Image 1 (cartoon, rainbow, N blue to C red):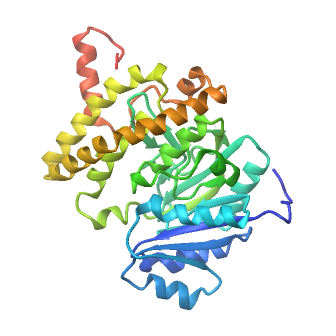
Image 2: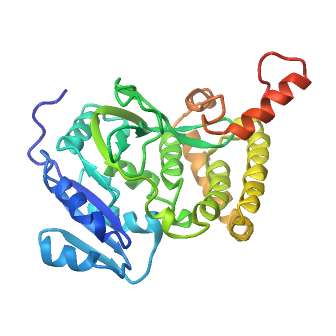
Image 3: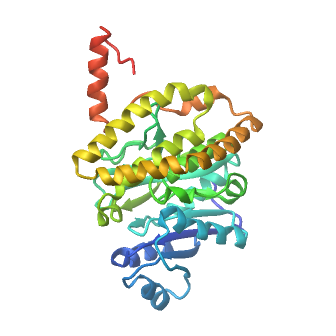
Length: 350
């Protein structure tokens, strides 16, 4: 553990905000109270509540970037990332406007990356706002093409207390090395919201940047506040974004393993959207996914070429992918069990 950080170290925190005035003060206060003082940037995504006034009048030291409309999470954090690059920062961390950080949240993440020059992302332990359940201890990606946050919903908040490598970091409170951004690019703004952090972590791994989970760094988060404001938002973004993560990042050697499983899960998810009377959102999302697929395949070409240039082996990528379903994929687990019985096998074959 590094006890003294370089005095020249420059770190920014970026808070994207859309109509988040209710919790914005607590969020900003927790960042300003960090033991490692960052440059704080708030990016307002066209809010119509008091968000802009709160920042301008109550936090004059905070840099404010104002958008005239909602550019989503990726479009909200990227301007802050670009500003960090302009400032010559060493690190930059996005931070959800409905979250509150422990006072050592940022220092713990910076120390972890400072001692690991080949790591591009450090991610923290995120708990529910009441501290009774885990929200995330890093992201996983599965052989089914479905990502999930490790530990979500579990009540043992002291679990996952070992510092360890992990597939990806949550975009809500992770720390990114600016040098990594200069090489691999920023978040994909076509995603708008959901899974842009998974896409970024996968891309980082393919470029040779690893991810570290730092359990001593803690954040408390009120889950899915923005998503609950808009009907069909989660269904639309999920149907639109999940195929892009796979098409852009899964190496060809593993694609034939992942794609069939993914398409089964994808069809089931779209069917569930229709059951919940959100089918129209799923259909629109599918249209956008297909419309932008040529662009994503072009991006895939660049990413997979970088993988080869950095000598990232297929075996390594396969080793960091979880060879199971996400814990909450109950319908798929039932189908897998039926398939195993049909084959007369004790072990699942999918």
